Structure formats: C-alpha cells, structure tokens
Length: 75
Image (cartoon, rainbow, N blue to C red; front, side, top):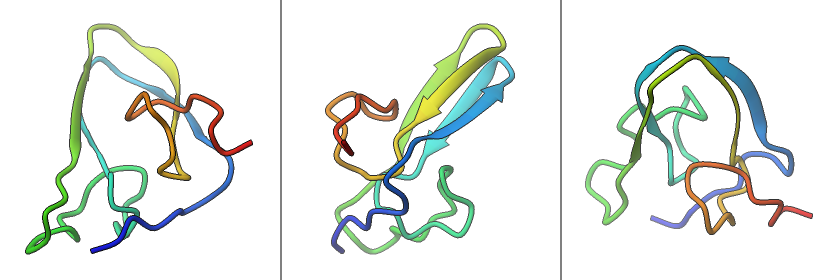
C-alpha cells in the first residue's frame, strides 16, 4: 500500500486529552484518524496521547517528519 496524500494543508482541530490513532496511510474514511484501511499492508497508525485539551495541526499530506503533527513539509 502506498501512502496517499489527503490534503496539502494540515487538519487543524481541538482535541480532548486522550489517546488517538492517526492515519499514516491516507486511505481512512475517518481521516485524520485511522479506520483500519491499512489492514493487510505493512502500514500502521501512529498512536499519540494528549495529556490535556489542545489545538493541534495533524498532517494530511503524509510528508511530515514529525508524525502525526504537521511540520510544513506540504509547502
């Protein structure tokens, strides 16, 4: 399975404290979160945890070096 860019801009949102599974393949119907679309491939979601409510910019182009967060690589 090849990584698929979903958008050339990050998904900016406010998330509650908790664990999340960021889609690393770009095929999820629940992007930017994993829905298991990677099953059967060598890809896996990136699990991350927030300890407090926070505004985040999650990568949608799949080029970031700082998964799951946007690092501006889409520019």
